Image 1 (spheres, rainbow, N blue to C red):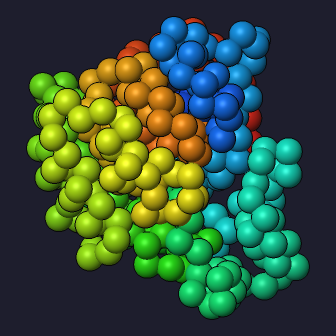
Image 2: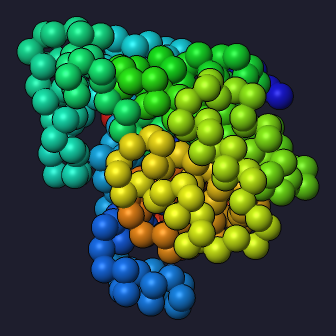
Length: 304
């Protein structure tokens, strides 16, 4: 696998494309009416709007990509400032990250701010996982670097082990998808078996093992009952389900996104995670051209 910055950045850009399209599609269905969602999924009917606007998930991922582009590494201090600088309240950020942004802009170091949440334990939310696919893609030629840089990218805002572990799992999945591109796709148990050795002991790991062991042909309802669908906004409730979805439809971006969306819950984030992983396997050409055209353009400040 090519280790040049140019090749690495191209892989990261593909992950960003898949993630942002998934985010923009999923944003229409986030925590919405299940009856409406079921009808759209059954008919595979995309929203009838000209522009699919992306959310905070993509906005933070743009900063990750921007730092990789500039530094050829995950510079934590630079990334923290980039998160704060490009904060956009209209993108749907949660309350905890809003407080984090203000403290960082006021000059407080990120490594102090990230431990303030939840009585000092730090956040175990799914935000570290939702923005990490480009990190996995960028470092796909070096799995140790994937895990280390996933940790570094997550801990800026997530001090809790589960939040960091969730990011590691998604980054490893994206890296493996890059490595597997051009080969026949593994089935879901085989794909998750490749991920598990890189996830430290945690609830995320245990539930990812459950995602591997669900029977062939399991319904999305069974997967949600066992794994969650992001409704709790935690890494534990989000990442194992996303890895199940990606493993089920690794070679089919559109199928993967509709499968993910059909579960309801935190649909913009789950679709962002699955979209980023699956894009690494199918490449830019595997993302429906009409969906990419509908997605709101990505800003010049991140793309260079």
